[in-house]
Amino acid sequence: MTSTTDQQDRDFLLPPILRELVQARNSVRDHYGSSSLTFTFDGNLVGDLGEAVAADLFGLKIAPRNGTGIDGFAPDGRSVQVKASCTGRGPAFRMVETRADHLLFFHLDLEECTARLLFNGPEHIALACLKTPWTGQRMISVPAIKAADQRVPADQRLQPLRKLEARRA
Image (cartoon, rainbow, N blue to C red):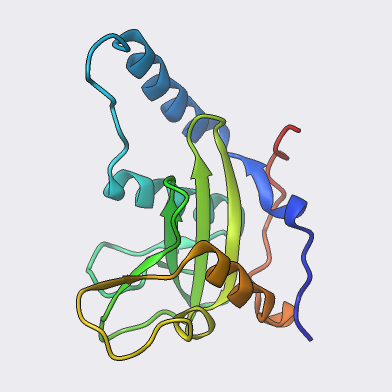
């Protein structure tokens, strides 16, 4: 049986400490608004934000950086890959030797300091969206990753350890 988790349950405010970081960046960007400085969050920082959200929400123990495709471990021992985007695009993957047991994909809205969990399930379900083999980097579109999420059985999802503050309407 697939999960039909209410999308509203997957929308939440970033944890307070991360909101402070994003709001500080937004203030600096706005202060220099007449210049061409944008203070864009780069891929590494966006990825770190996603991993921090996963650690807060799911109790993920973050692994040392080693380029293996595993960002951390869930409390039940499953290896987890965390992907995050603030561009409205889907997650991008490289062909790596080691795959995680589980994938979490977040869309971050850095203007509103909110996040939305778009995929929570076994990584192989998401990767089935990609034609194999491939070289370089390949992206799964947002509609495709949402469709893949709908195929995840409820008992295969990571369960949040606590509820984060709901996104304001």
